[in-house]
Image 1 (cartoon, rainbow, N blue to C red):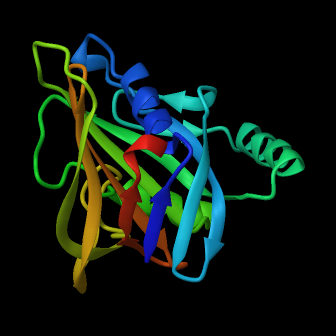
Image 2: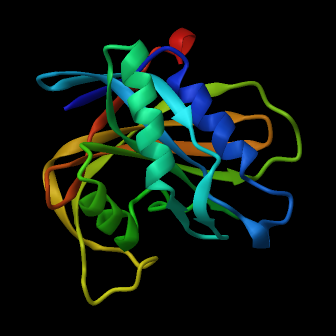
Length: 204
């Protein structure tokens, strides 16, 4: 399954994650937003991203969206566009990078089951540079997994996972003092699984 980010979708997600990455790393907060696009069989085009700053609860390692506000945004968007709400995104801010930093948490899988929306994007991000850098993007390839809710695990623990017989693709990059990785997941009604993310740089 190919998930294409177009029309400045990537830059909006990245800037929103940076906005909620504070100077004090002990007070990290996650970003949250809605994805709009068009699905055509195995190709999805995300052509509009709406950052949602107003949420019910925001802490250093979790965010609880306000569904009333999200629903109002979805309704308003559908009035002026033919694209549909296809999912959500949020950030995972960390003090340093590690291999699974953009994987969904057990809480993320639970949240996907609650929303029942087809896609979730997670942008893992860290501020690890002393100097400002221009935007630089590249693709990351890795073994794809399916993530399953573990009722015996805590919210921020890793969920159960099963390796799939295919690859996943993420969008990695550097911008200003930050390093980031954006991964996409498809929700099939029970589990989250990796998708192939694509982005044309001049349209991201």
